[in-house]
Amino acid sequence: MLLSFNYTATAKMYGNFNVEHNYIHGELERPENIILGYGDELDKDYQDILDRNDNELFKNVKSVKYLETRHYQNMLEFLMAAPFQVLIMGHSCGNSDRTLLNTVFEHENCISITPFYHKWDDGTDNYLELV
Image 1 (cartoon, one colour):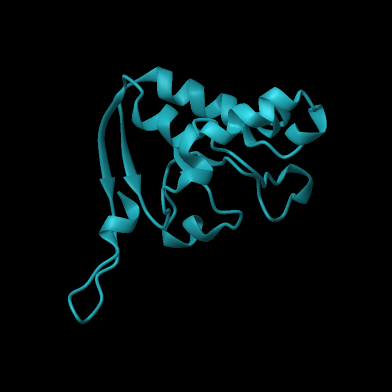
Image 2: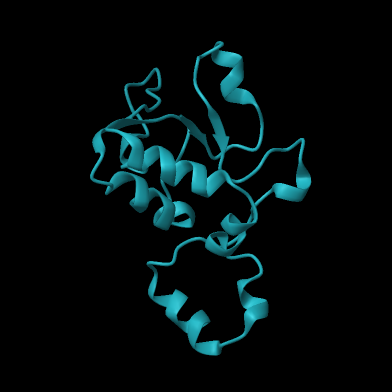
């Protein structure tokens, strides 16, 4: 499975892979399914949101929006099916997706995680921004 956090079909331009594309946050061509919003349920501030007991605040929380399509469920089924490797391309692995990435990275079937990073002509890179 290619789990894409990009709303565009960019990954499909790299070749015709025999792999399912899962646009976890939706696709640009289907704006009704696009997920934007807060996603770091591991952050201490998330508890403050819960404590307010205001359902309106959850309108754009990613874990709530994930229930509106099959993308998240399809990802979970893939994770449980067999051992898998994670290859990270073009994702910062930032706090916005921390809860979902934690689900993937810490899954018992995850056998390796390989981040791909950019190296500039002067020898510097963005590796530390990704890990």
